[in-house]
Length: 346
Image (cartoon, rainbow, N blue to C red; front, side):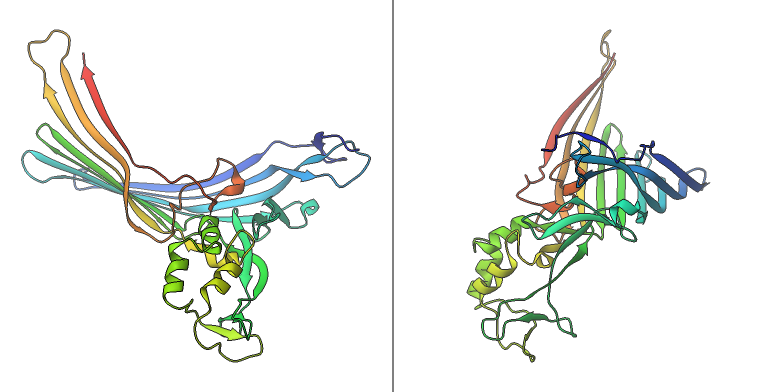
């Protein structure tokens, strides 16, 4: 019986993680310091990350091995443009736009991993989070549709049941571009500010939607029943186009659920939201030996989306661990928050 012990892979020694980075940047100011531009390019490589492997070697006394594995490269740009303007004699406006682009690549994995490492294994599910040489950190694997040469899904000739294809990478939750637009206005004693955040690109998975579809209790399954089935381009296994709509129950009991065709439940993670808005008033306190000034403001955060394509907040994470990024399995929804700030000067 093997004990539940952990240690380095026999014959190896653990090394500390090592990060090397290169960064080049420039900053420019124009129009008497009212207009600014800040641009940075960077590249970093992180080596010797710690990985855990289940032991398959008897007689070692270990159930889990630790080893150094991997060379992960991140490269990208960060750019900020800011502008200060005096709209009127008593009103000022400050605005800034920040844009970030990052590209991640798994350059190398140790030979003991065979080129692939499961962060979260599939188990009873039809999805897994993996890292693979040549891929990117956080790639999501899932069951794909079987498709014909034209890209149409392939279904059973008689029943219209979709056919499953390969278990392969179906997306990655990391965005291609992030954006933040911050604005602040001051008018005499009144101040107003707001922040708009945007995330563009990336793919996320909703197992919540998949399970609800499988049981026929989602809006999507109800709409399909009311419309006489699922209208999707399809071809028969034996060749030729599948005529008509696929029965809703046949379609969703096949593609839905944790073990269905998870490609169908990948969504564009692009979203733009009003991240924060605040309004305040500054009181001048006179003839008071204790309080010299008083600022009162109200603030709201994560208020609403201007656009969102996924059926859940794509930036919500099930946990702080790496193995559940970009996958929604009945997660708690993101919430709005409101606050009152009072600041006194003594």
